[in-house]
Length: 116
Image (cartoon, rainbow, N blue to C red):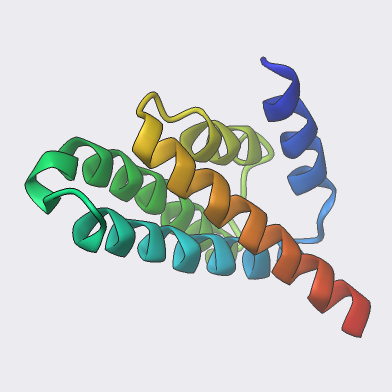
């Protein structure tokens, strides 16, 4: 596991279930913004179809975990899967959007923790 993935997996795993869910809601929201950027940015959306598909797969993984979280069937292995699906995308445009979404979600998680 690469260092950033390991660090982020440890961070995500250390959150409570509620904190993880809140983070992942922000992450999914940020990823949808990333898809909008890919669809309406400088390049034609058709040129970004691969990036859009990969970003959508990351959203699918995040939302799948949230479904398990809400059902009380979380698995301890899922945080690593989420981190890898978001931060290890093998496409430059999708990686940029996913990294921005991750940073946004972490900043929102920090804001929520500070307010509590």
